[in-house]
Image (cartoon, rainbow, N blue to C red):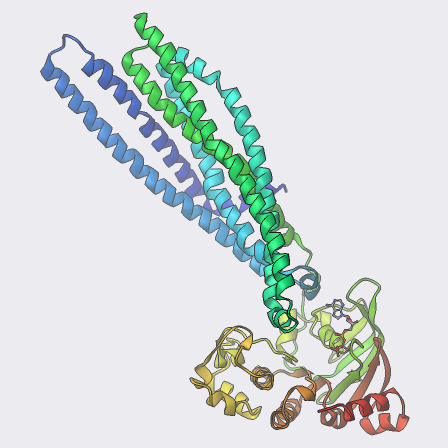
Length: 584
Ligand SMILES: Nc1ncnc2c1ncn2[C@@H]1O[C@H](COP(=O)(O)OP(=O)(O)OP(=O)(O)O)[C@@H](O)[C@H]1O
């Protein structure tokens, strides 16, 4: 299906309203363009009707004046309704599309977000769709209104005077030529502006995210240099646009004046030659039409440009909608009541980027209720194991099972609602502390929230906040310490009451000893009676785990209890001793 047809499919639910809008457009075109006819009648039948009685002429003048007033009120009243209706249709279509796009974004797999910059996605959901809205309201409907207007006026002009009309229309190709040229230049300038704006936005977004690092390493000067370079480019593109745009209206106005001159000359000659074909009234009406004729002509050629821009936006939006969803739900998902919680990896290999295997032929099992610690140097593949269980990525080889079932047999939602995560640097949403714990789940009451917070030792610091559980946290949880964020994340995990728990454990060094003890205690309570996988950095967590996996370069090089692994006197012992002697 081509882009336009596909886009029009979004307009289909509103086709009845669109037909009404077009009918109203037609009605206004006819009504408003009848006004110069009245002017001509007043001129020729009233003002220049020599010899007729004054009383009769006055009555005629009044009659035409009343019709004029009535038609104006009706014409512009209907136009008001039509403009509202058109804008409403445009907004509805864009609302539907925006929703469809965001739904799609939420369904995308992690791999897609790895390769697609946030700025790009933001542009898709905001400005690309915004452009489509202009395209619908001003572009499609506006162009049709302009065309109606142009053909309507042409009809009236030809009806009035074919001779004058032909001489005016003969100037049009020349005018179109100039407008086409200027429009092409404007489009190029516009494209440059968008490209350069996007480059500047990307830089700003990156700088704002990394502000601490910029300031810490005194990178302000070079940052502003980069900014300045892109800012200069953007200014140049804007100047370029202004240059061509400034030419646009003078060209149109000149065209209009030339047409008026032609009309006045040819019409004037005809009147002086006492030709019946052109009267003074006709000439005046004709001049009024000329004015009305050039306005939609100009806006139509302007729209030709925005049409191309919108097409590019439509293409990008549809590309996103067509993006393959790599992690899909099975047709008949399994939906067991409760997962006992046995997790197994069988010969699993996985690569984020093709052929760059970060998990190599990994097999292990965790029994229900067990705590499994995963240790290994940085980049060994520990977090990847947890990513795979949540189906944030699908394995390329082998299988991951829960309770003996391939996790691809569950729906993503059903699988994930059974999993609880405690991340190293948990994400805090803008909202109250309570909302950040319940994540808006309707089944989680205030009592559940407080119970969860108390269990994981978060109640103390939350109560000390100005409005307790109703304190509003701002973006990314500024104002909370890392330890507090972790406790909050644990309360969040506990409140969801997951069947399986994954903890991406933070290094001990980042929190003080008192907080460390609170976190450790909270962790123990969270893991109690739950199958848990912990990426462990805390010696106590590692020691107390039922089993430990030792990972190195994506391979499982050893597994067992702490005592067994220490007795082996291998890589684990080296790792453990390194942690033991690490500065606190
Ligand atoms: N989204 C990604 N895209 C591409 N490669 C990735 C991605 N995430 C991780 N990797 C790579 O996969 C490998 C394993 O990463 P992983 O995060 O699982 O390591 P880790 O053992 O958890 O490390 P750390 O202790 O530093 O968190 C690393 O080489 C890493 O560079």
